[in-house]
Image 1 (cartoon, rainbow, N blue to C red):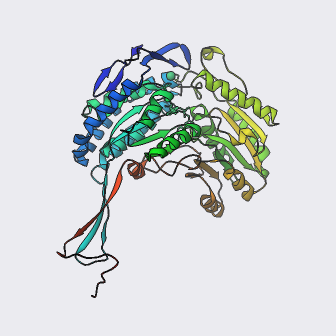
Image 2: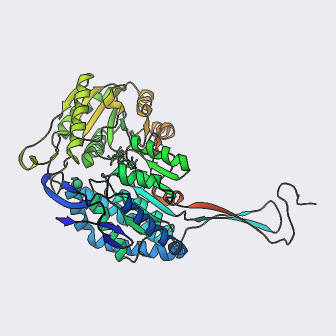
Image 3: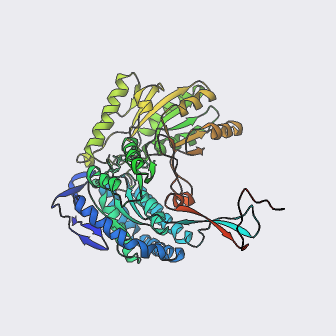
Length: 496
Ligand code: NAD
Ligand code: MN
């Protein structure tokens, strides 16, 4: 068991609060993965001061040189991948092949950052006036607050840290209290890669103290947040008051549509991976399965048989398909949704109960659960459950399927299984989500493409790829007049 300290100005520093919290293994609640400081505003202010002090020098380091540090970080991460994946499985429970994937996403994001510094271009445009040229460039903003959830302990922090720092900003990250260790280790990687002191600082603690502290600090120029829509609205509200930039990646209620002509075996494997990967605790998890009437009965029979074959277990066992939920409160919340589903008249096909057999007796395991005959207005069809619960809805036809698919307040990811080219293209056009998959599940984002959602899933920003760099930079428009005379836009004309 490791004792962690805050990471401020390149040093491990005790919290002045004297308080700590434990990070436990959800597959074995007797195991304490680490003990972390429960920080206070004093600690946060030290981190903000360090980040402010580091900013002028860091922003003047050329883009390609900042980028090189990110590439070196990727090289160290490649060497630490297995060790980091095992730590991640112990701290949040998801199975080892998925934590390897989570860390790989971090490596890929670091490699992308390692190249981005050499190609970060603006535009050059003509002027309305002679002997004049126009350009744009992007500059950093200052000190950022990065607030992350527990379900992707490395991938999501890297989506923020790498573009934020490569762009020349400095930052304080507050990781989720369920998964603080993975971020702590990542900060060490960046330091070893040559990141100057104070450019990235880690402050552990609760959302109401450290999270709110970041939102309310006048020294923080922007907040990048991934988490629930409820907290996201709160963050948008506070940032709105002082016009802080804020990017919000929030909840989802993602649907997979299976049309009558789909390859049903393929659609089945997609639904299993989409709904029960990460024990359903993904923002992009398949939470609704919308099946066209002619194949409905056949498909739910196939689904039940396949779900019952999933093996629950400690994620460190290579043969486990599904790990535990992250903590007790999540398991209680999942079970209460099962009760709501039953009360509202959905038909429980399989699961619906805690699982505590064999090696699972000391973990927060829950049986993969499927409800059939769900109607679009039921709460289990509308609210984000964030666990291994799939709601199956029957659609009359293609148009009905699209209506159901779009009929939630969220808009992150959707998936359409069909071999009908026309319907596939129509669905791409009509889907109200930021991400659409054709003949693939609702999960599977790649780091070089924009990632984010519509409606209550976000506020219009996109992480991933070049768009993440748009979040963390400010556009500057430049006019260069080499005529040697006063030229007046909109007033002078070219033939005068
Ligand atoms: P959460 O909203 O409870 O917490 C997220 C982070 O916010 C944590 O670090 C938490 O400590 C902090 N926080 C809590 N209250 C705060 C406050 N008042 N001010 C500032 N910070 C505060 O979310 P969670 O349970 O950690 O994660 C699950 C949620 O995240 C789900 O809704 C899921 O859909 C969403 N999520 C979205 C994406 C996406 O990219 N769209 C990705 C992953 C997870
Ligand atoms: Mn934990």
